[in-house]
Image (tube, rainbow, N blue to C red; front, side):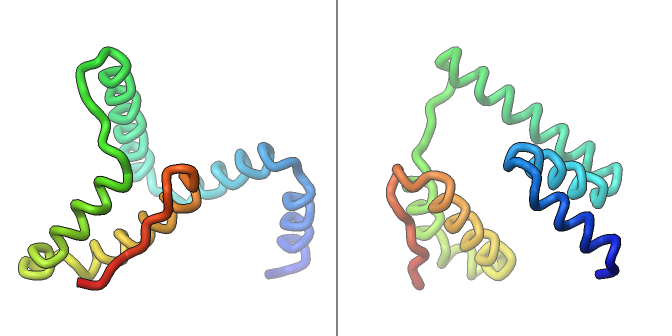
Length: 113
């Protein structure tokens, strides 16, 4: 990293958390190709549609703990069809994210099958 980049990083780190988050979002967005931005927009719309449907009582929610339990239960099937390697990595990342974002819902730990 050159000096000007290091200076920018230092300045960015001195920003309040909300400003740093907005800056990080803009920087990450600048790395996404236009197609990825379209995909992100579609997912954001889907999330909003699902929230609206939930609020109208049209869908039920399933706890994260239940989802991960079901995924663990299906790991053997996933292995048979060759899905587990990339999915397994994402699964572990999802568990870590869940545990960090939702500590009040109980910790989840990956189990080996």
